Image (tube, rainbow, N blue to C red; front, side):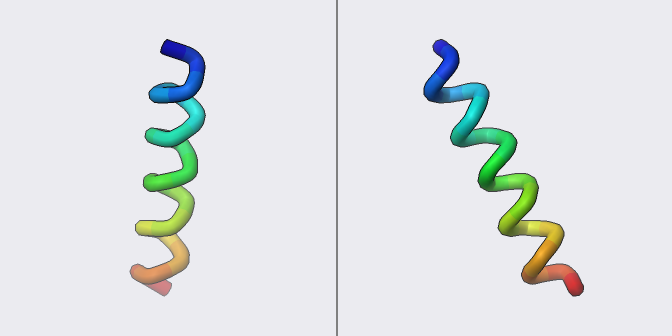
Length: 20
């Protein structure tokens, strides 16, 4: 579960970087 949470956060971060 924790892994999924961290992965989700990482995905959101990557999305934000790509958006920039």
